[in-house]
Length: 116
Image (tube, rainbow, N blue to C red; front, side, top):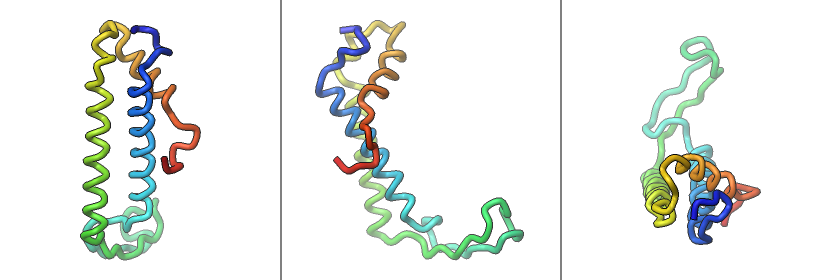
């Protein structure tokens, strides 16, 4: 099976789940304080003026840290499942990267940040 448009359904589903997991992880991180550990902010001009005023960060709670760790574990598991899928053994080495990129494009959900 070397046709870039003929991926197994389970591989397409895994790749789509991976896209969604990445989007959920980014969305979750966007809602967290800017520093994992409590840290004092600064006023524009003191440091890194390109960012403007930066408020104090209360840091992440233990629950938030555990959630991020779990999300990373899920991302790693899905990534390994996609990369180690038996389909890739049937793809010639010279077009493997091209087919991998095609899979990413083909399996990308219309609304990546939409929960599955």
